[in-house]
Image (tube, rainbow, N blue to C red; front, side, top):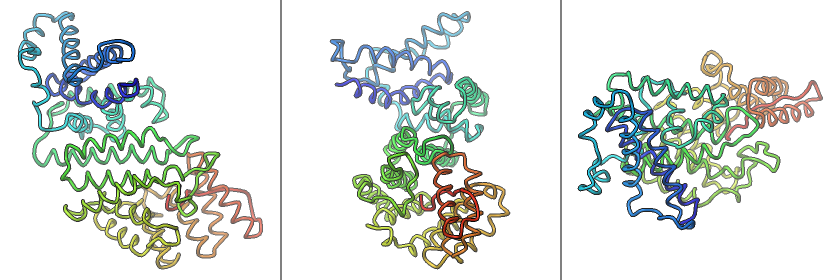
Length: 430
């Protein structure tokens, strides 16, 4: 087994082991420290290429045993030694019962830990950070880099999140019945946000954060493995795969943004497209319809068009109308406006944007101005398009998007007679 195989295996097993320990003992910080020590021990002992003992027959059980011993050793060394030893007597690992930990729960431990990290007492940013740290296996420094904040700031945020869960009603215990289903919805939303940040970074010099997109897909696969009959879990995985299939074609040699209409579709990942289409087709045929399935269906229509000119925009507009009824959201309206403009003409798309000017969630967002600029350009209004491109470029915090928008503004400006400088807007149909 190569070093990378060991790394991949440890990343897969870490949240499962942590989930077991937290479910048993409830002390997130102590459990996480113990798991980290077990992972360090495994990384030095499992590499058969260095003549060590190699990967054990039950790597999960090995990690769980080592982490539990580290945990109990740490507690025994503290000042409240006798009291804590008494409380832990019933939790000691019993060598006479091998494999019991592999069978103790029907729920995948990665999913268990995800549900814990997405406790409703936490804000969405804290849910994201804690999920990436505890379940994704990213270091605090890596999570901080993902959010463009100092490592110390992120360490404090993660520490506060753990304390808030510990002090909340139910603590690290999982809810039952409808409450668990509601928590699953939060989990899917968190994974969706992680993927989106990886697919189109909200700020910085790079358009893509491939490590975040890959981690979101890995975690969603774990959830889908635990809940194969859930249509929305399947739909979200399909959406990620169909969207990620376009990643290689989304930037040029200099890292610049390439909009969907101009992408080289020969560079799209056909294996991901085939898997994504199969997943969403199965979900649509066998489960109740949900928002992630609808988004995946839209992505499938794009993926199956051999050229941009072959895109079935009428079908996409219908799907977006259904999505807007089921899960109204200003970003859905923006995407629907582009589809309607393609299917019915730019005036119809522009009309859908008017109510968004009074929506505080999006009125100052660069994407509203970018979409408006694109539709005004299609409608033959270069002056209006130029002003909207400039405003979008001013508002975006993404360097690749700003450069793209500035280039669009410069092109419109040149065609309209050179009335001003450069600006830009985000590419519709990204």
